[in-house]
Figure: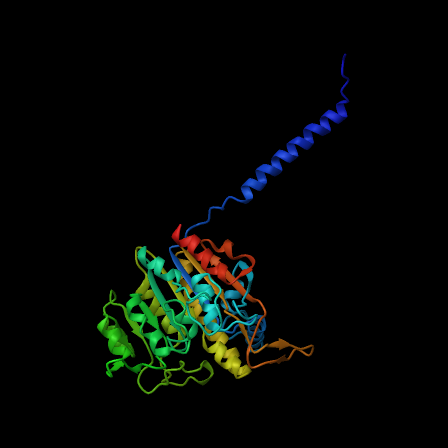
Length: 381
């Protein structure tokens, strides 16, 4: 018995089979990790409390001032080729606090609000910075607020309460990280169980750190030495001088910390440098619009210093700019005016910007815990 084939049906069968095979191959490829360029120098800038409206308000101000400070009315990082959006909720609240968000970014795990580096089951977490240090990377942590504050603390400490400032600061020296910078410590003095008074600065000095308060101190510290940069005597340890209030003797700025950090961290093995614009959050809690705009511009200028470094080493450098949460519920009205809706944090997603080696991993929408996972994937593999 002869079977008659319809040529059109046979051709359709062949095409369909080829398509299904290609889909299987494509699905298999989708599950294979893409190869990404491995960065040697990684910057993570966190604008604490920075939301979309904060960015737009600062750029609107620059445009109104003929872009005297930035050159074109845009903040330095908004021109980065890769952009995305990050969700920020904590383990126990749709609205995160800085310690929970900082831990999510630094350790890749959701924890409860008001805790640093300890998950809801009580397990102590370590930031990926410790893994990087074991591989020979130098680690830098800088902020425009106190070094024992929630966000910087998440990158070197674990503590049941973010308000245990002395206990957090006591974990700085044992980390062995090469560079720390901030306004100071909120609780540098404490009485131990033996009734002895302990000064956190003494502990850090004994661990081999140079305490740098002035340009003269910085010049006297040899480049290989680990350093702690803090404000000079007479300045309040809670924050650096606000950008809007700076006079002739304002002390260090976040830009100073960024520039010095690069100088001290650059080495043959590479580095990871986290710099936080913590004052953005502080002034947003106060609903101080003018101060917020100036802090945003100050933050942008710090990123620009890293961008200048990137231009020298474009194939080896990754810069990431994001926020831990939005503060103040800043919104833009129909008449082009900006208004605060709360003095607290909000639960909205925040932006992320990236440029350089491996930056394509930060495109799209993802959770804040994924930031740590993506950085670890790029630097540890």
